[in-house]
Figure 1 (cartoon, rainbow, N blue to C red):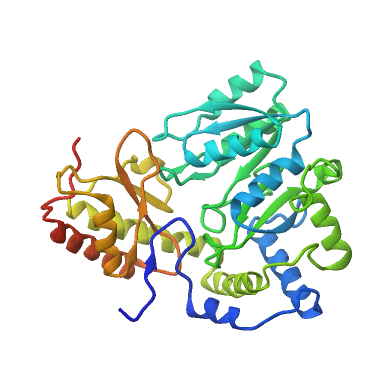
Figure 2 (cartoon, rainbow, N blue to C red; figure 1 turned 120 degrees about the vertical axis):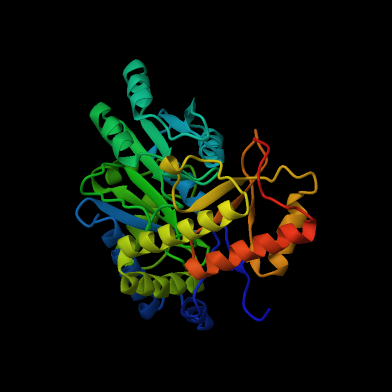
Length: 372
């Protein structure tokens, strides 16, 4: 096969040739031209959430998790108390990193097949005045659940608590509008729905709380207030930036805007999701989630009941035909995941379904139906 394998994962993603080609040039990290790329990119990022009046955006080297950790360390004071709304693996990661940074952390658990409950959150905040911040994963890609950002944000605002949103797998696809959705911080990354390459995160921080964040972080490299202050003063990154990642994201951003921005990106991903689930249903596969709570980002499927099924063999057979699937992230049932995001369309999703069908044939499996 002479094309790159298609990544049906929650990131890294399949990128366009234009985005790949943007990385073929070397850039000086202090050069004025590169600084302008960074500045233009930051303006474009703010425009996606309509946050120009209310928020700043701070880019940071590293994977998205680096930026989640940086946001918690920068926003939450040493005596703060973070409540993590937990309905999946990435929620649990947020709780772990919060605890590792020495912040008090409580976890409010929910079924991983259901969205978190704003009503339950409201009751918890009424009962515990010590909670200063709430962490929400907008799209929990452990199972693919779309969590209710707007109602959760309204509850937090009503109680005067800070909201930190991990929008890693939703930003630029699902609607997020800072003009109507209050949040203290929102975190995303280059290698997700903007269809750039991995290596850079970014955090939107509400202007009104920015000054109070000075000196809170116990990390030099992950101090977002210091990063922001230095960048505003000099136009430069404090430490060596991932130059090729930045320019690739700037090129991906140009394609995002030309496509029609967030509404168009969402429409394509919905088409991908529909093509995937329609085709997989014909093979007998059953999604783990109810469609009403499913984000069109990544779909978790039950594993086939056939005793011949083995994920590693299944993965290898699909990979040999040009498609990279993703293992399940759930604990109570065996699953696998298929992403709907990246520089792909419904045709590629139909090809992926065909590759899955051939993989089943290789394994002697007549149907993808689960043992339900």
